[in-house]
Length: 283
Image (cartoon, rainbow, N blue to C red; front, top):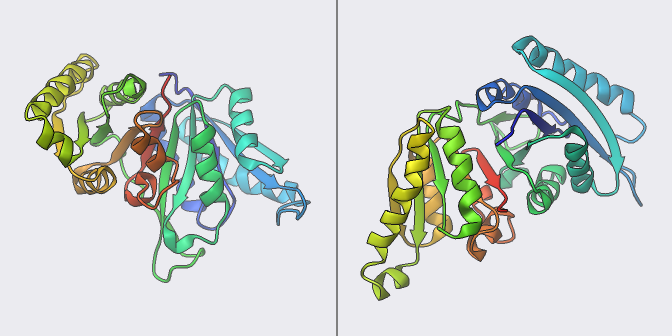
């Protein structure tokens, strides 16, 4: 993985401010350049930020200063577009970014459109990994009182795979991060009916996961294989929240993974998990 440059999508709301304080740990991911980006929505109804570009640039520059002191090269970019998600991804391509970082708010903050529909569109259309940072309300559930779930995301990584060829990229990302972290575990969730119909399925799945674990060990990490029976979304969120600091999922595995990640159902892992989620597109 080449994560030397990361594009950070910001909407300049009060909830975004604490998120920038979590970016320093991306140095441990191999990120050396950050592109702080804000897209002003234009169209039939102009976005609230239209005509305030200088003010927004100043806001971004204030957030860039401590990041430069931390050792990052930081660029600030402001665009306007009727399709913010497409504009962010175009900017990521122009900057040579290997990662997009965007906030993901809880359901209590559904009034914000940028971190709802735009975040999902970024995930759906992205051809590079997308890191969803959790932003949660504190105190009263208002936009002005938020905190980001800021922690050492590499402390313990959980990689979800359905063992399909398209999920290989997520395993590779997990191996890359495991070499820089305390390790990574691999999780496969199987429907109970499949396990009941094939008594050897759990054993075969564990064997396949063990082969994947060899990549993690080769990268310098450790880990274990986990096979869970039940509803995928519920199982993944429950296990991820129990002991992990980062969840890595593939975007183009079986349909249940793709649909959950892009938030097309209420069972979406990106909405259920209380920890950051790294969404990795398949090849």
